[in-house]
Length: 514
Ligand code: SF4
Image 1 (cartoon, rainbow, N blue to C red):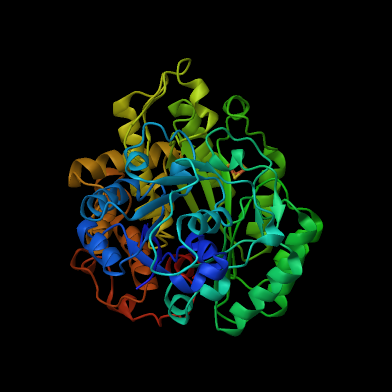
Image 2 (image 1 turned 120 degrees about the vertical axis):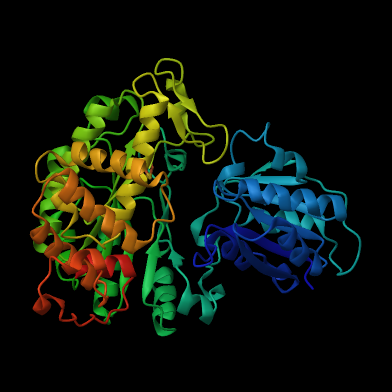
């Protein structure tokens, strides 16, 4: 039983909710009266409501995000029908802007907008009597409660609230800073200024405790980790000094800022220990200007060359389809340019119209039409019609299955043996769609067979040479069974099983590393 239940629906079980732990850590004297209850979006809303009600809470705080808003609306609707007296408080980026029309907001009692670390406790104090079990007070707060930007030094860190089970089985998020000084109009973080650093010594003390508890993989959620070079260098040095095999650190970086002092420390990490998520979004400078994202492409290219040639960093680079002013051709040229820079992964994201972002100012001029349902992806623009956008959506999905998965490291470049990568992969994507009529649920062995068929029957590459490359990729994942369609192209000595490399790195990254 708990008077306050903090809950959210994570996208997957493996994601441990960072925001909820911050709220719980900062509840002060109310902490013993509160608990966490995490679910995932694949659970049934009524089952979730049942579990939440079983705690007999007086207040339920929900973390609302783009991936869970629909399912959470159903959960809250059921709770409010069965137990209308329970106070529902919402928070999170999905309910921090443009709240007027949202059904979930109408169902809730209060919505805390902005960073609620301290404000949530304040609202709970006002709602609950000082003595347990007494009735709820009349709220002093309005429905929408804007949270003042909290001072980082006043916020209790949440890291002790990761359980041993979380540390063993889930993705653990940490942050050394909040906010972003840049103004990319599609991004919610462009509204999060100023940038604030967590007190460094205290933060590193918390990281030491996580290391001591055996945590190996750290996912930093800082929007621009390399913004403050001195701080990022100190943090990298801290982890390098304590490096153990299997350690893995993920950072989001701006691509054109890698001074020598950072390069030097990055180069000293063992291969596979660092992953940089690098947002490029567009290589079209006019589009960049339109959306207020300015970057130095020469520096960016130089940094990529350094990372690929002189470090073992795993690079995950982002590009966006559908930005205002972006044509299919300019997106394709950007994709080719990025392929040439050699990141291990390219996330092709479809533009989302996130609540509160200023990208809406282009809606009329560029005839931007977005899906009104989450995740609010672009359906068409003046320059890319709906049918083409659908082709590009499939391109993105298939690219993730083939290019990013790490299952086809040697096979994928065969696709662009005779033409540039974007044009070639689009050809493959269209062909695959016709052959399968689906973009998910394609088993790996089936996908390999389809790739082989495309490369040999459509592109007329030599079947024996392709079979040998496909077979090497297939065995790299530790598989020994020889797919039937390859048998006639491979000699017996080619099927000696490869020894599987033991690693504790995330699977996809480990495949790229091999
Ligand atoms: S896209 Fe990256 S750099 Fe731009 S505002 Fe968002 S977090 Fe900052």
